[in-house]
Length: 75
Image 1 (cartoon, rainbow, N blue to C red):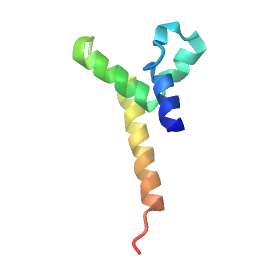
Image 2 (spheres, rainbow, N blue to C red):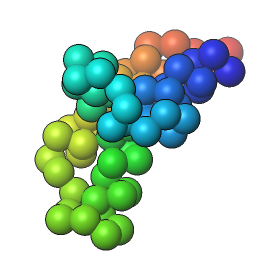
Image 3 (spheres, rainbow, N blue to C red):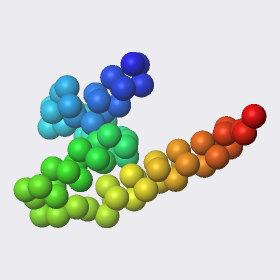
């Protein structure tokens, strides 16, 4: 739950990103939930999905797959 709440805060779900300091907004750009939220928002009614958002999501998926492959064992 703590991971979800922290991720949701950095994604701008609880507090709009416009109210956050500039340094914190820059950190928020590289969190998976923020990238997903921004990609959906831009794809739905904005200029289109930015490559940075897709790269963050791809890196997160790759890291998750790598971690799962390391931890998974047939027993």
